[in-house]
Image (cartoon, rainbow, N blue to C red; front, side, top):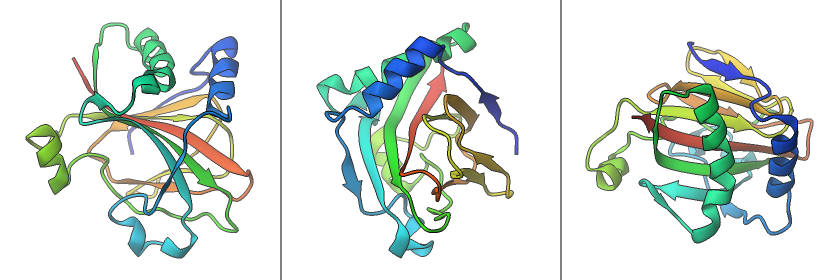
Length: 185
């Protein structure tokens, strides 16, 4: 599987502030009944997931959603200085500790029938960035079996039309990541 990892994505001060923001008591979290359309087929009984949806269909979902997204986009621009970004979707995921590494189901973030309604077409050229906020034994698994373990302050970049799934953790109370789907301009 071809992907790019950017370790130490934020500098130390930005990372500390961002982590404090995510763990703040006023950060909104909403229970998600299933992670994706395939999650019910995989270990559904043990799936516990909370989400803070930021952008859907290219539009912010609520007024203050940008405070969770702006630091990542601004830092990504430093790593990719000649690119602009059209954000199609973004959310923050919070997984709860489990007794085994729950697999949440292989999926594409964008590309199902419902996306025809949101975007007017299926977008095949989008990219995905997953920013890992804390280290644990969970991570992202790709359809070829490649597993990227979640490491604090690391960004994972890959082509969006690659099947992947979240793998829950057993060693930390929470696993938090930010998932962003975007087109490069």
